Length: 541
Image (cartoon, rainbow, N blue to C red; front, side, top):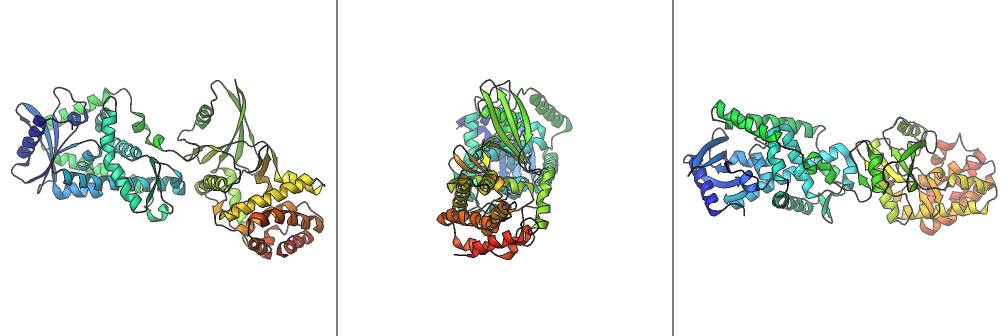
C-alpha cells in the first residue's frame, strides 16, 4: 500500500465532489503518487466510477484541504465497455494497466482490470499470429511482454503518456510497480491456460497447439484497432476536458515538457519483443544478426568474415566464416524469403502426381525450427539453431563439417563398403523419424551430412508432423538412383536402405512407396529399368 490513510481520505472526498451527487461505485488512486515518482506539487490522480454520466467521462479539478486533485470521472457502463472492447479508446480503462490503488470498490475494479488484461492478451496473441503465423507457437512469452507491448502502442497513439510510463518503470520504483501491474496479467493468462488457448513453459507462456485456428483475426486487425482507439481516445479526452482552453493547454504543455526531460527509455518499452525467448537459439529483431550471434558464441570484436553459397544452385543457405582472435568459426544462415524460394513452386509442377511442397516463406521457416526440435527428440542429430530472425525470415545454424550422403552413395556405387553402411544408417534414422510421426518432406541425399559425430539432417524446411512418409523413402532412393545404369545396383541400394529402415520404421511405408505415382516425377531422370528395379525391391517382402 502506497497511500496513507490521509491520502485515501483526500481521494474519497475528491471523488464525492467530482461525482456531484451521483452514486460512486469505485474510487482508485493512480499516477505519480501511487507509482512513486511524484513531486511536492503533484496532483492526486483519482479515478471515480459513477452510475450515470453524460458525456461518458470528464475531468474535474479542485483541492481538498489545499491538496490539488485531478479526478477522472467515468460512467459505469462506459468504463466496463472500455475494458472489454475499448469503447472509449481505453482512455479510462487504460489506467488499470499499471499500478493503481483501490480505495472504494476493490473487487469491482479487480474484475474490470481482469476483463481489460484478458482482452489485451488475446489481442496481443492475434497480433503475433498475424505477423508470424504458426512460428508464434514457438515463442516463449513472459507476462511482462503483454504489458510493455500494450504500453508502447498507447504511447505511439498519445505520446504525452510516455513520461508517466518511463517514470513508472524506471528505478528505483520499477520492480514494485511492475510486480503490481503483472498480477492482473498473470490471472488473465492463467485463465487462458485453463481455456486451452495458452500453455505454460516454466516462467513463460506459449500458444497452445492449434491456437492459430482458434484465435484468428482479420488481416491488419492490429493496425485498424490502433487507429480506431487512437481516434476514440482523443474524442473522449476532448469531451472529458471540460476545463477552459488555457488550463487544457497548460496541462498538455506540462506533459510535453516532462516528456522532454526523459533521457532513456527502459529497454522493455523501446523493444518489448526483446522479452520473448525461444526454446533454442536467440530471437532477434535486428538486421545486424551476425554481431548478436558472434557475441552469443563468445566471439569478441574485431572479427572478419567471408560468405559463400552452399549446396545446389537453388540453395538459399549461406556459409559465414568468421575469423577472430580465438580462431575460425563457421555458421550457416538460411533465408526463406529469397529469389530461389521460387524453386518450390516449380517443384510442385514437376511432382504434382506425388507431392506438393510448401512454398510460403514463414511456414517453411517454422517447419525448419519445429522439425529441428522434433528430430532431436526422436534421437536424430540436427544442427543446433543459433538464432531466428522472423522479420527477415532467416535461421542461423551451426555448421556441420562433413560429407553428404549423396557423396557416400556414389562411393558405394564405386565399391566402397563404408558408403553402403552410410545408406543403411540413413534408413535407420529415417525410420526413427517416421516412428516419431514426422516426415522430412525433402529427403534428398544432399540434405544428409555425416560429420565427426555421425549422421545429421541439415535441411528441414519441408519437414512436418505426419506427412507423406512414403515420399521420404522414394525421394531418397530415386535421387540416389539417378546416376545408376545397373538395375542390380539399384536393388542393392534399396535392400541396404531397407535393412536400416525396418529396424525402426514401418514396412507399410515401403510397400506404399512402390506405387507408380511416386515414380512419375523421376521418369525423365531415372532410367526405366532402374526405376522398375527400385519399385520391385520396395514391394518385395
